[in-house]
Structures are given as structure tokens and as C-alpha cells.
Image (cartoon, rainbow, N blue to C red):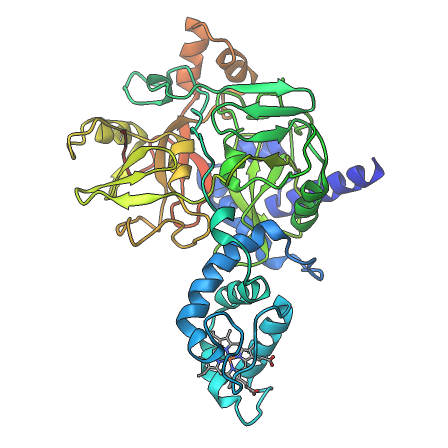
Amino acid sequence: MKKALIATSIAALAFGSYMAIGSYEQFKNMKEDKRVMLFFMEKAFMDTVAIEPQLEPPHWQDGIAAMHGEKIYQAQCAACHGTKGWGDNPMFPRLKGQPYQYTINQVKSFASGHRNGANAIMMKEIAANLNEHDLYNVAIYLEHADLDIASMTAPIKGFKLPDSGQLQNATETFGEDSDYIKHPRSISVKGQVAVDNNTQLMWTRENQGGMRLSEAAMHCGDLSTGGYNDWRLPTIKELQTIADYKNSKPAADTNIFTGIPVMGPAGFWGTPVQPIDNNTNSGWHVGFPDGHVMGYSNDGYKNVFCTRSESGQYLIPQLSDNQNGTVTDDVTGLIWQQATTNNHTWEGALQQCNSLDLAGKKWRLPSYPELISVLDYTRTRPAIDTSIFTENDTTGFYWTSTSDVIDGTNSLGALFMAEPERNETAQESFKISNNRAWGVSVDEGGAWRFKKDSEYSVRCVADE
Ligand code: HEC
């Protein structure tokens, strides 16, 4: 109890300092561009916090880092050190099984010239050309060269992507979330745990408390509840599926998920730990006041929901290029426009997709969860597979069809949005006050809400 209290106070402090403002109210009332700046300030904050000695990276994050590390290793190291890191040739030392910190330190020491034995010259240039992020991944791969990476990163069997939760119109223009009900939200409560009938993920219902990312991963790893002991920290995509965008403060169903702070720091951790903008000391979180997706220093404090699944993870899309300007993702069954078009207002974005004539499909603007689904959080800048999506706007945001309900609508919006039947007066006030929608940065993977007359990019989506 005491620990949770301290954690919450630290979280509050951290929240306050990166916001550099006193309260959430103030934050809400800030001008648009100042708040957009905050989007990036949180990133800056990640870079400036003092980093204490890291705990061992836990198992769940190793899969992703190792997957990348293996590719780099095979391309740049295997020729000398052997395909499995065994050092088959006695001239080249065995690397496999070394603690990742050891590998990192040795490579840095070759790069700096500090380690300069007779054969060090062979390593110097290779070491100097390896960036921090790649080095981390290779080192993790070498420590765990036996991991079954494929099964750790496979998709969940029977996975369906839930709708954003929005059932009401915010505009007359066709194409927003309420116009396409595909997989209505469906979460069943079973005692202390909840099962999402769309994603097949099981969740702890109660906020597990504020903690650092590595502690959060270990907490879920050690957890035994609901008759299961294979809990883990959710991926950022998994965590976003429980955000319910018809609600705000918090953007979640509080009959199911309990203990979410209503004001102030209501962020929850998601994985992978990295890369975010090539920063190995950062994790992802969903901020539940409104459901934003953002990076954060993994030494900061965030809250925790643990999850488990019978198979796989919802993390990496399974994309195939249909060779006709469209891309299919087998994880969601969605078909994506390969190209990007720029400079659309939100209304313009809805219309752009409604009128897109491509491959004989009926196109629409993707919802916020849909646009997140096509991103690949094991990549960064951009956080999307560029071998398939060759054209991306890496400077701005992409519009989604999901309106923002936290701004202006306040309790009225949230209240009436929870009512399934239409209330004309409430709907009218929703339309007037609801002048923002969610935009996603395909470059980094973060998401924020923007004024609907801002101009951002568009990638349309279609159903199979
Ligand atoms: C051209 C051959 C060559 C390539 C390619 C190469 N290495 Fe090496 N590496 C060596 C040699 C030779 C040594 C031993 C140097 C010494 O003892 O001073 C070494 C030593 C090391 C060591 C120190 C091992 C220990 O236990 O002291 C590490 C770590 C290492 N290499 C990592 C890598 C990584 C990571 C890559 C790929 C990014 C890589 N090497 C690519 C030749 C190579």
C-alpha cells in the first residue's frame, strides 16, 4: 500500500515536470500548437531523466530485440564469429551466451580504441559503425540465441480488432466510426479477470499500481491470478484495444477495469521496450485520460494491467503486397492503401477515402485502433514496414476516423456517449464541442488529438 502511494506520488511529480504545467485543466486549456509540442516534450523528457542501473531486460522484450539482432548479426558478424555465434574458427571468439552488457561494453571498447589487442583492428571499424540501438539488439540476440523468436512474435489465433467504441456521429459526413460497426466491444468479466471476446486476450481488471517498466514486466511475470500464472505485460497495441473511445477520463469501461486514475497520470505501460526513436531506455504507454499512445522513459512510473493469451501476441502485422496499390494485413484482415495523400482536413480525409477508386474496393478512413494496427512497433522512424509501404509522411500525422471526446464535451459527452439511444440535444452539443479527432504519427507510432481543420495525411483502409 505504502509502495503504491510512493509510486503514485513519483508518477505525479514526473507527470508534472514533463508537462511543465500545474494541472490537467491547464493542459486542456492550452493552445493547440503548445499541446502538440508537449507530444514531443514527453519524448525529450525521456532523454533527460537520470537513468539508474537497469534491471535485466526481462524475457518478453528479448524476443523483439533478438529478432532484429539476429538479422544484424547474420549480416555483419556471422562471417567471422560463425552463424550461431559459436566462434567456429578459433581466431574469432565465441559470443553466444555472453550477458548483453558484456557484449555492449566490448564492442564500445573496440570502437573507442580502448581495447586494442593484435586482432582488435578487425573489430574497430565494425564496432564504430554499429549504432546504439543495433548494438543493443545484437547483444540481446547473442545472450539468448536459443529463443524461439518465431513463436513469441506470432499473431493471436482468432484475433479480431475491436471497434473504437464510438457509436455516435460527430459530423454529417459519412465515414466515421459510428458508420462502420464491425467488431463491437465485447469483454466478459470472470471474477478478477476479464476476457476480450474479440482479441482473445485475458486481462487483470485491477490497476496493478505505479511502477517502472522493468518492474512492471516482472510484476506481470510473477503474477498468479484467475487460475493462470503466464501473465505478461501487454504490447502497446494490445493495451490500446482496451481503450474505449466513447469514454474519457478514463477512456475505458470502468465497470470492467478498475483503479484507473481519472485525472493526472493515468498512463499504463505497453511493450516493446524499444525501439522508440532509437532510444533503448524508453517504453510505450497508453494514457487513459483520453487514450493517447506515447513513448516514456522506462525509469518513469506508469500503471499496469497484465495480460495473457493462449497463443501469440498482437504486435507485428503480417503484410503482403497485392501488387495493385493495396496491402493485406492477415492479422486484422484489413486491406490498406499503399500510397499516402497529404494535406487533408479531417472532413476532407473522410471524403478522400469515401471517393477513393482503387482495386475495386470500398474505401474508408481507418479508425484510430485500425491505423495503430498497421504500424510495426519493432521499428522506428518510420514505425511501419517500409519495404511494403514505400511512401510515408514522416513529418506530420495521419488522420483517423475517431473523434476525440475528452475535449469540450467533458462529462456531458462522456455521459451521453455511454447511452446507446440517441439524444438529440446531447448529440448537437457533441458536434459543436467535438472539434478534434485522433491523428497517428506513422514516423514514431505515437498518437494525439488534433483540431479537425488541421491538415494531415491519409492512408485509406478497406475490408476484405
Ligand atoms: C572481420 C571479422 C569480424 C567481424 C565481421 C566481426 N568481428 Fe567481432 N571480433 C573479431 C576478432 C578477430 C575479435 C577478437 C579481437 C581481440 O581479441 O582483440 C573479435 C571480438 C569480438 C568481441 C569480443 C569478444 C570477447 O569475448 O572478448 C565481441 C563482443 C565482438 N567481436 C562482437 C562482434 C559483433 C557484434 C560483430 C558484428 C556486428 C562482430 N564482432 C563482427 C572479428 C570480427
